[in-house]
Image 1 (tube, rainbow, N blue to C red):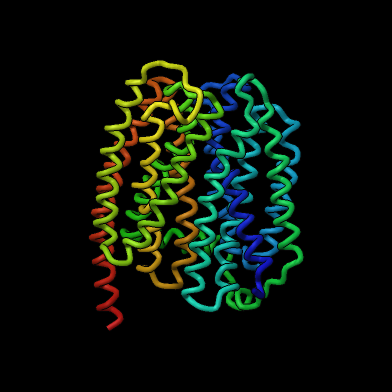
Image 2 (cartoon, rainbow, N blue to C red):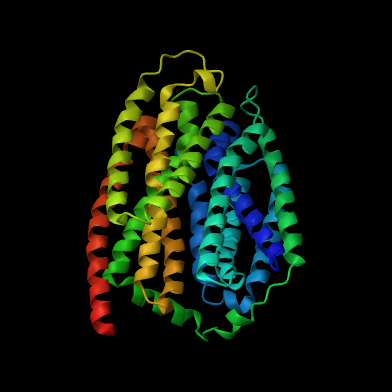
Length: 418
């Protein structure tokens, strides 16, 4: 219980940032209603979020230890608290774009610091794995809760109402509590400070480039990129799909998108049990085949809506329940491939690899949202989600190659070490 304040602060950090980061789907729907922007224009909210994550992660990963993990988290929490308190008074699309840029930049500091702090507040590998799983699970809880929190502030009677902006005052309150908890907590960073490598930003960049040119890392980057492209394109545009294709009320569109978050959390929990006994590659390949099958089943259901007025969960169309279950099937992929690449590489390369994971995941997310938004605008919502079959197929091919390279890499490392 020595680090309870820091641990509690970490949980609150991840909970609030899960709400903020994954509110992009809800906000995409709302800015179309409030500010009259098109789907293609609304899709740029994802790049504002993801590119700021990628850029800040790259810039600070090499010297964040010198700044200090606690200080970095305090800076991020203070900054995002101020932004959240200002947001209800802005009422503009530009302010919304800047909000997501601020969220992304702050989360980059939080994520790097949290991952590093977990190693400082745990004493064994089992404690580390346990706390990491709790933190990531709490992130999914935050995503799930976010849909209901935002929907509470949405005014169905007036689609043009900006009452939903009031949610940011409450979220600012949460981040302020996390700031005060962390401020009064003690964190011994001497172990991390002792291990600082005196590298310049240029040297860190060169080390990252040297790692990227490795074939196994290149194919892993492709796997991570296309997975996040699939996940974020669905997560960001599901509320809009529910509203504009399935004709659900705005509040219900947001609430029913929570099925995706819930199924994703369940998928990762079940996979965590299965991956202890079964081959990761077999499980992931089966997941992708079933995910593609689900798309082919769910999209025709969306077209078969009978046009009756939808008032709640009880008379929502079947497609609103079926398609979000894709989260159950794709959820195991990202944590599994991250674990495989990190455990395959040597310890000294894992820090740089973690930075690459964050950067290319962010790029995949922003690419997926932009493509989906533009397909949505010009060809409709069903076509936009049918498009997910393309990256699903590419990801399956990449996984085949990744598996072969991983086996070769482990064999060559074993021969070298012997």
